Length: 259
Image (cartoon, rainbow, N blue to C red; front, top):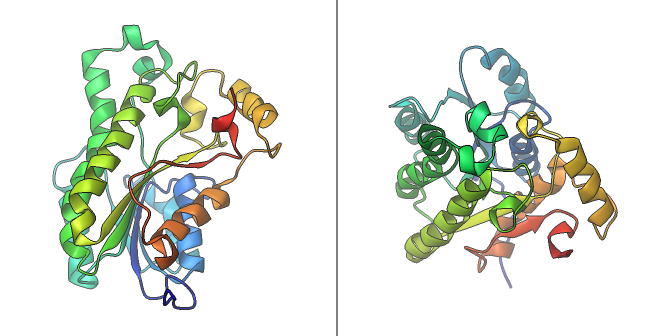
């Protein structure tokens, strides 16, 4: 029998990166982790964003709310230094950030600039690798790392453009990190939610059409929400998922199985 505390994540320490508002996937993950007993550290992008995040952090009883723009040198290291100083360890890492310059995101891949591609790859993919490098030494008793992907990593999704190759690189990075960190008891998961109405997704061209198509194709006949994604993420961090690592977990109502 697997010994599981009640609630299942009681006392675990979790860093969730990417909460923008109460509608974001990262907020769903943070909320689910908290409901299962985890203590939270959240990040905010800049001083403009902080007033919006403070009430969310209070509602989730998060003792740590830390500034983090992964594109600014030193900020990522400062986050992990603070976590190390306050908690001395980390059990769960959730990476839910993605960004590309608007012109490169809304244009086709053929017209994507080298600079735009590099920035999208750095913020949306390599930042997870950098986080993993800093988080691993704090996962003294093993741990769980989760990165948010999308079906456009595996199949062509019209108008997803540069983010398709970037998310493909993110999923591949998760697989290689799962291999490298497995001996240390650390499991790494790419999670692929179905289309969701989030602020980040609103930057995609014809996103409403994508939502409608997903609803029509889904075997369950409806879209997923942020809590569906959040509880899937929380499950992966529990002992019930102790032998799962590296594979992409779809949380999309079955859309990915449809032709």
